[in-house]
Length: 279
Image 1 (cartoon, rainbow, N blue to C red):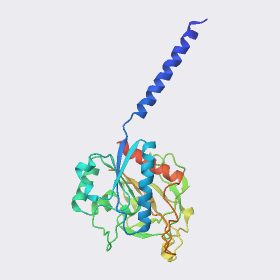
Image 2: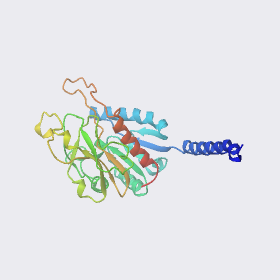
Image 3: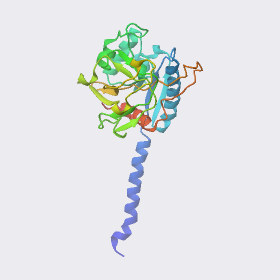
Image 4: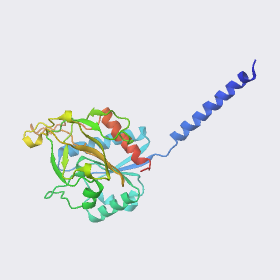
C-alpha cells in the first residue's frame, strides 16, 4: 500500500476538526443587543404594527444571534441605558424631550447604530410631531418633513437601487412588499451626497393607493422607501403601517408588515449589518 493512502484518514480528520472549530467559533460569537423604543398610542395601524414588531423581533432574535428588548419609556433614552445596546430601533415615533434628543445625537455620532420604521420619520408643522429637530430630519434622515402619503395601505413593487449594500445584496432586483401607507418627503434624497437610496417604488406599482381622495393615489414619481446615511450606521425603512378596518369600525387588522419572506430578509440583513459594528 502506498504511504499517502495510510495518511489519508488522518488528513481528513484534521480537515473535519478544522471545519468544526470554525463553526464553533461562529456559534460562540457574542450576540449583539437591540433595544426598541415605541409609543404605540393614537393610531390603531401604528399600534398594530408595534405589537407585531415586538413579537416578530423577539422571535427572530435567538435564530439570528441577537437579543431583543423593547420599552415605551423614552426616559430610557439616556447614555447609561444605551451603553448596554449596539442597535437602537424607533418602531413608531421619535424622542421629544431635548435631553433625549441630545443623547441620541451623541450615541449616533459615536458609533451607535439605528433602524427606524415608517412614522419614526414623520414630521409635519403644525401637528403633534412638528419639524422641530433639524439634525434628525434634515441631516440624519435627510428627508425633511412629511409631504403626503398614499391611502389605503397597499402593496408596492419595490426596486433595489444599490445591490452592493449588505441589506439588499440577497434580495431580488424587484419584489412585492407587504401592504403599507407610503410617504412622500419635502426633500429630494437623490440630491443629498450623504444618502444612499437602497429601495424605491418601482414604476410598475402605479397607480399606487386606492383613495378615495385623488391625491392619495400616486400615478407617477420617484419615491425612496429604504435608505442609509453614509455618515452614520443607520437604516430608515418606510414600512410599518398595517391596514385596519376603519370603514366598518371593527378595528380588525386587515394586513401585517412581517411574514413577507423577501421583506423580512431585507430587515434582518439590515439589522445584522448594523449589529456587526462596521460602518
